[in-house]
Image 1 (cartoon, rainbow, N blue to C red):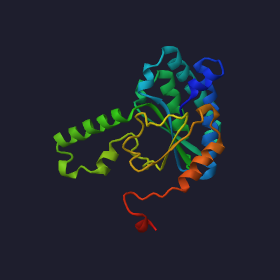
Image 2: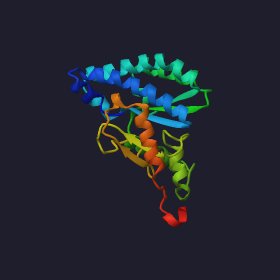
Image 3: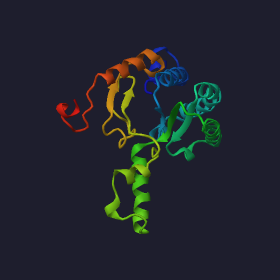
Image 4: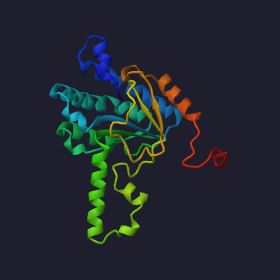
Amino acid sequence: MDGNGRWAKQKGMLRAFGHEGGTKSVRETVEASAQLGIENLTLYAFSTENWNRPKVEVDTLMRLLVSSLKKEIKTLTDNNIKLKAIGNIKLLPKKVYKELNEVIDFTKNNTRMTLTLALSYGSREELINAIKEISVKVKNNIISVEKIDESIINEHLYTQNLPDVDLLIRTSGEQRISNFLLWQIAYAELYFTPVLWPDFKKQHLYDAIIEYQNRERRFGKTSEQIS
């Protein structure tokens, strides 16, 4: 969800106002996704690298996260959406961590869609942690080296209960992945849009999905095999 800061600067405002503007796009995208029947939506809300941003911006993001979680409980409930989180969330401030877990627990029985927030998330860190956990199990003879395959690796990732990514959307015109779900997007379709996140509306989501629907997903096969 990129472009909040640039959106604010274009309007002569502090970057913090861009993050506040971005919360409206979150609500609209989440509701539109649920209405379309999308079963899983993951939002890259805060990366491990974002901790290096100016303290005032990080504090603003954390404050917005708490207030947004409180405000969006009704939206999640009304739309039957379950909230989950991936990442090193124990690094979050205590108040944020507490609020996050309360909303996760409150929505755990919802079934229409799973909304996953990637918070304090970095894919390289995720993979390193998975390798460490698997290595310990190999050392303790819980897993044999010969048994290590994709399913074993998947079981040790933050996303162990989520499917692989079908469509990855990046806003703001940047054309890079930025350490997001590197393992999980192996066969994802990538969609880059110049629209800054606070300006991203449901029509932009529809445009991305229509583009996705018109692509041929071969997974290493030929077009003839797919047809």
